[in-house]
Length: 580
Ligand code: ATP
Ligand code: MG
Image (cartoon, rainbow, N blue to C red; front, side, top):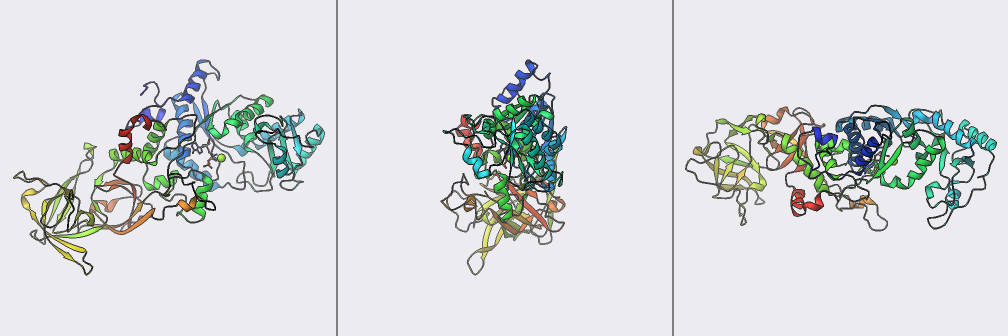
């Protein structure tokens, strides 16, 4: 790890060191600009979400870069809603985006909307028309596409390209005044229809759209296109380093063209690789489909890769920031293993989640030689990673629940947990030995009879004899019931987009991504658990309280199971783990 190169987040947070600090070419650019005094020592960034959906883990990468780099160099970051598309945008999304950015741990300096700049953008468009650098085109969208040419063939000039400045000014004013129907005319920049870069072949700057905007209402019926709005918004805010994903690399010449022609503040666009995750879709359009077609319960369904869904699932902001900082940035798109994200989640929860005992699939155990009316409080450690977390009392009594999985009537080799005649340790309890099994009509065990050794209280035998397994348990009389929702991957394929002809990505949805356990048995200390609280259910995984939870009607989500496949992968090829 390069000590001079911590990200702002990793410098201040506790937690695991990311495996390595990847070379960060964006940071290098900023350092160079500071050294050459290109922006008078200023670092100004922005995070520019379009409010047409909820933020996802891909956005978290952009947020950590935009805010993290500015923080590191004592700069500023604006949150700017890129609201140039009135048909798909809603206030609900604006609110959720602000909540998610705050939750991730970042604070914006300015809060802006591209729509704040509609008047300025219009004035600048008029200026470009006046200088002969923009024109009103009457070609239809299809015709514009035809005239545009291809990567191998130059485009053709529109027959309207040489309209006079006066005519263009008049038509553009009438477009704004609402005289023309949607799609009948556009304003285009006059650049070069033969440019090898298609983005420079007279790109559309404005379209006619009679639609109500979430902030400007019906004031406008022409709306600027992304390419025209974005760079100018950056420039208005005097953004020095405007980070965006790689698909905008070919747009950079256009970004620069507008700024140069208008002679305004020269913001600089820098592209980095989009985050892709295996078994995950990260496109708001696709996520919206999952919501609208009812494949998930909503944008914050714990199976969704949205920040709202991940928060509800039990992800912590620290885990997400550590993950993002460890994947680094590059100039080529790739795909990151979902297992790696989960690895950072476990590492973080391991430090902070209190341990408790819970039985998901209960099997009754009766300890025949334990007095019926007796109960004892056993001491249990809250978090072995955090001595300050102390201990708690867990009630022990004659009838307990253990996990069905922890008993086998005919144990296979290597199975050391409970079986007839076998002795095991109850965590924080006693050694017990199975004496008999009661079965139902289907031959399934429903009640296990055991004896306990009073000399093993706390989990150790005075005579030093050993047992090979320790299992968790809950006292039946003291247990509280809870619904537990177990989640698995939302998609069965690493690349959910890989489908047969005629199918869409939903064909790869995992039919068993959610399993609901109606009546798990929990130790009584969980009676006070509040929505959002995270725990490690010993031997099972990390679980958190879902907002659906009510006193007396607890609902838990499994955040992640304990087994860490990424840690294994990482041990195997450390070199590959840092950056893929
Ligand atoms: P989507 O494809 O999910 O709709 P988008 O790029 O259209 O995403 P925006 O709201 O425009 O979403 O994105 C805001 C910022 O987040 C942009 O700077 C964008 O480049 C960045 N961003 C979006 N998706 C990712 C991703 N998967 N990885 C990294 N950055 C991303
Ligand atoms: Mg977008």
